[in-house]
Length: 364
Image 1 (cartoon, rainbow, N blue to C red):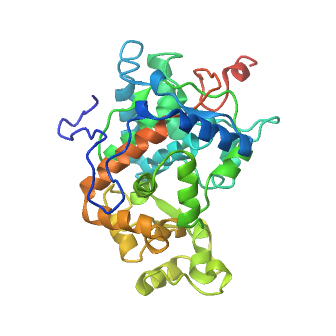
Image 2 (image 1 turned 180 degrees about the horizontal axis):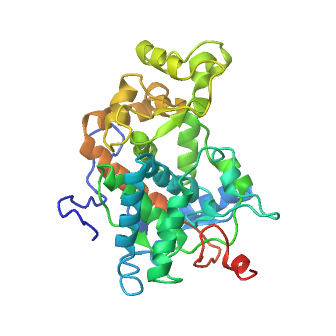
């Protein structure tokens, strides 16, 4: 159990039921109890999208996986992420986001880290990633440190999962034990990333549909959206909300007027789309302020505000988390663990460089 601070408790997935109407905030099934139907459901989704088959690989993953082969692996990752966040606090949110963009596209296999080649368009250039995903160099630093200590042992896919957890902890969020033992993919798919990953304009209904296809619940959706408790977003992602919501030529009505004025100044028409604003009022602290902001109609992204303003099922969960940070933390940990179990059935490797497959390295 990694807890170098010595004071932060590890949050384990809880199995107690909630009193929140018909929604179950904490009664989430354990990973090992997932039904075979999940595999069939994901097979159907993957076939439809032309993607790899994605399944739960819980039997291959375990806490302390590197305890004998690289016992200091988690400490090395924690130290590197801490150093990166000291240089640039925003890198914590950027690193955490990599797990989402990796695991939802053909499982948690570090395909998002592969650089494009003449024969393989990379996922880094996918619509939801280009000019948006960042801090790949932080993962490079972690991998280099691990290769010096334990060459060829720790996968890039596991580094993403460990780094995401550490970014949350170092930003003030919950600690949890990560299950490790993933392999790195031999390829990437920009097309699959384009087909699967939602845009900042997504509404609650489309997000619920996406998550349900991965056997993730409305509670998982809201809790994992709480990853936006830290980080910043680009003006490019919100100009339509400010000036032309749904093609009306008007701003999003579900926005606090004072907050909209602030965003108008930050993101004027014709302004620099790469200017950034905090995703919530405390963008470097992992807390439940994100949900308080949504209740006050101060969500930065449309895909965030719609969880409160666009759907009764998710609105109830947002309200719960805005009042109960502990409930949010528990549900977030549950969601991160469940998302981390998404795996491709294709065999992979342990990359020596997270940006290229080993076969490419041997050519030099």
